[in-house]
Length: 321
Length: 276
Image 1: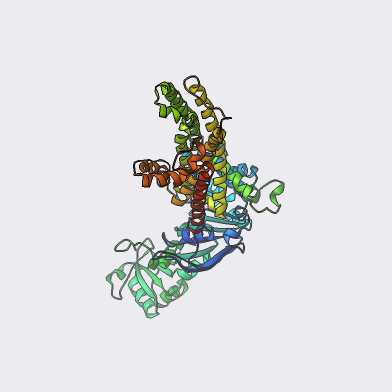
Image 2: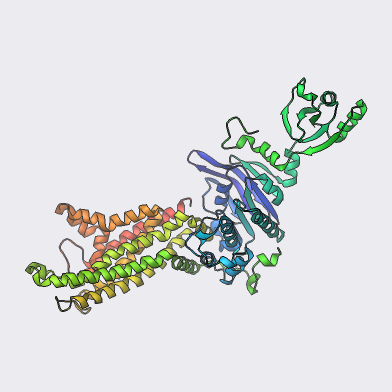
């Protein structure tokens, strides 16, 4: 259990974290989501006592991190897999961490086994690939068999195999009743891993909700329709109060269409504000032929982009949407 | 993946864990120090330079003794000559002391260390204690070896010293103590400055550059530097003869310890307060 109350972190004139309050609960994977520069890492650093909050407080297992009697036994963290001395052998790296918290030496070999690095335990860390480094970082987080785990962008730079392994591990850790907080700037990654989401942008909380609820509430549902009488259907739907856009055949919504837009003549339209059953009934009542009628839900990725659009730190000129 | 593969196995699986102690952090810092190659090399350089350079200087100066002027013969200090290499080797200890914390900053390991041990004072205390102990052992071995090798080479060409002579045992053992306190100072400097290059430059300036510059200045500058500059004052512990405008051995060494304590306290405070 991690609890943050009104966390604020200011670096000079930059407000990195702006009044964040949240709880991270056990037994599930909580995704910590936001664009680059949103304040995810800063928040994690405050949880782990590396940075002192400008205001507010954060506790782990009811205590401030610095007051934990044996921190690694309660919290396992991977902030930056490269944060180690490259000249040290993998086993020695884990051993010095284990010793600092009174964790028995035998546990070092156990975690090396869990992450699959037994064979390279005597190699120096600088010779490790990105993926191996990430595994070593995860091994150090698991050393104390902690009830709370914090991972900052754990799949960054991993190959598909490694990504799958990390996902499975997160799910397994949560299934054992542990508290798992995982940050990412990739919504699609979180869609596959997280049960709960904390979405932040520019240091502020945008959403604190279950992953399912997040998609339901923040994504517009639309109906994808293909019809030889698309223009007429569009007009009737507008009369019924719906919004209609010209659709592309790929099913992706493109630009909003003004009432008399010539492109409505194309045979694919996207209707929002009506569900597929209503559109079907309306078409039947007017004798409009339908070739295709599909309810479409925006992907989690689109919902995320929609939400964080205003909070991106840097945006390409002209916009990418 | 099942729980059993992630969770700790063995009988202490369900045992309540105990709080981490300072002893745990000491063990951890010892593992850190012995598991990087720079430690071995820096200590090897300390011994080789300390003994080897001392031997070369001893042999060379003793062979020239016969041609010395009377005043040079009067100030002949065989102990000081044999320990000349140790003074140079002190640089290797200073560099290693800086590196054992600044390399954590440059690699990012410091964040991992402080997450493992968030009571930061413990990390600094354990690091200093472990490294100072190593510096003490290596320093004493180097000093005594340099003394005995040096005296063996001097004997027969010039008057040589034995440990029983007044002040000699104190000077030789003092050279090791000087390295020990220097070790603590360099760890503190590395903690304060966080960058290897800056901290090493600073140590070289304190140890060699500033005292050397002072020797070129008028007496009104040179004398106070020789008397009160921390490393000059501490160095009195390693010399048998008392020169004018210098402190007595133990008061001088005490002044250096006091200086190191102040720097250490500043380093401790900053480490504790700064964002890592």
